[in-house]
Image (cartoon, rainbow, N blue to C red; front, top):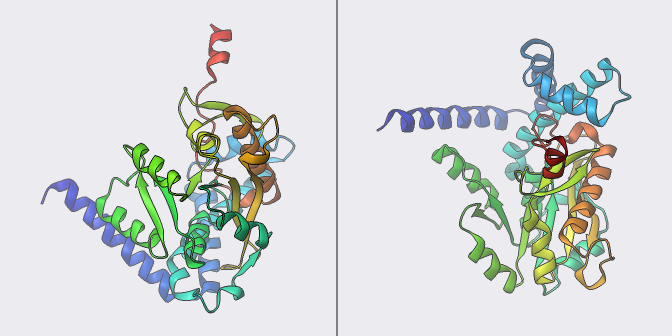
Length: 305
C-alpha cells in the first residue's frame, strides 16, 4: 500500500469515527457541540477569519466588527450542525415521519414542475443544508442527477456518494460527463446543480451579493437548450436542528421567459438574484468561508491595462 493510500485510509477512518460519535449524540447535544466548536474556531483558532470577514464586510458594509464576528460565529455553528444533521438524517427521517421535520413552501408548484415530462434543472447554492435537500427529493420519490468533482480521497469519495445516492440521487463526474448529461436531458431527467461555484475567468460574470462573480454558463444553457424549467431551490433550517423549510424560491419556465431571462447572461443574473434574496434573509446559513468572488472580469482587466 502506498503512503498516500495509507494516509487516505487513516483520514477516512478518522472521519468514520467522528460520524459514529455524532450518531451516538442527541440532536440537542449536537447543537451544543456545534456552538462550542464555532466559538473555538472564531475566537481561538480563527480559521479562515480573513476570508470570512472580507466577504461579510463587502456584502454588509454597514455591519460593525462585532456584528460581523457574531455572524461568523453563527455561520460556523450552522456548518457544524449541517454535518451533524447529515450524519443523523438516515436514522431520524423516514417516509413515515418526514412531516415532523419538513415544511413545504409552494408545494403545488414543486410537484407540478417535477412531474412535468420535460427535463428539469434544480439550482441551489452553498446555502442552508443543500445536501439534505437532495436527500429529501429522493425520499419523496424524485430521482435527480448531480454534477460533482470526485474527492481526492477515494475512500471518503465512496462514503460520501453512498449517502448522496441512498435515496435516488446519482452523482456524475464533473469531467467527461457532457454526453451523459445530454442524454439525460433528452430523457426528461432532473439535474441538481450548485449555481454559486467559481467558473474561472471565461465564465459568465454577473453581480452576486454586490460583487462580480464568475458562473458556469452550462447552468443556464441546460434550460435554454432543452426547454427544461429551472427551479431555484432552498432547504433552510427553520429554528431547530432537523427542522427545514424546503421549496422553490423562483421558477423560470422556458415557455414563459421574460426578455431578460432569455439569454445565458440574463438567466444567470436571474437565478443569482433569487439566491441572493434567500441568503440575505438567512445570512448565517451561507458559506461565507469559501472564496466565491475570485478573479476579475475580463472587461475590468482590459480597462485596467
